[in-house]
Length: 264
Image 1 (cartoon, one colour):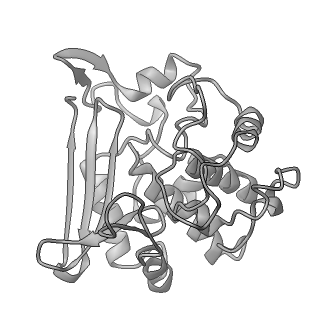
Image 2 (cartoon, rainbow, N blue to C red):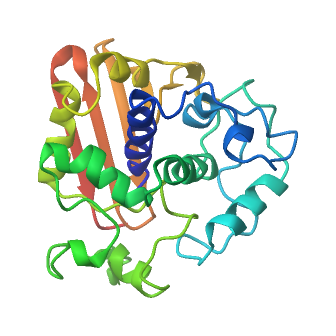
Image 3 (cartoon, rainbow, N blue to C red):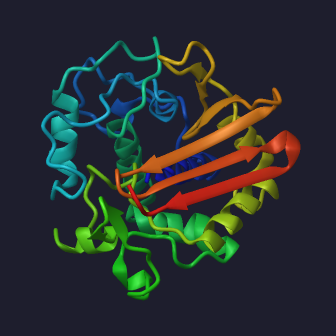
């Protein structure tokens, strides 16, 4: 689910470490024809998310709609923002998908290929992805809704052309095993794919999340709040209404929890 956003944020930060972009870069650096009201939205604002993009495109066709990059951008850029960039932070899928498109544009690779080569393979992860070719047919738990077999996300992606499109790509939908998440969590603890400075920037509470009485803030691709013990809690949750997952880091206590279920 939306734990995918943490991978997208990490991809952006890897590109900053490679000197290929800055979190202060505006959208018009990557998309010269972006309308004036969105031209100065920064990568930082997309990451936080304080860009003003809505959670979903208006009247989108759902997670698996076949929508190519140019069409997605045209629709996202033509819709009015929900608020002036930078004044507050509200959860958005659209903004995170735009970051995924920037990853592709800057790296010259597909989103999934960039993740594999720059984030996953260096820490011996070989199965996180969207495509059924990465998984044995019996390796993914089927989702269930009201006791009925919903199937798997790769099966739903395959039904629409075997490719994830931008209503889902970079904001949700990645598959990962428990072992993958174990390796991923330890890579942050041990600073093996990103530097300690970069990780600290990702896990900094940059802006308060709207609607939570100041109790939750956004880092880069994550939520930051306090645990019941008044310790720092870094939180990622995800769901498509069938599967639910949650990844919680308690860095001051040396703990990471990952939970996932396949029953709505």
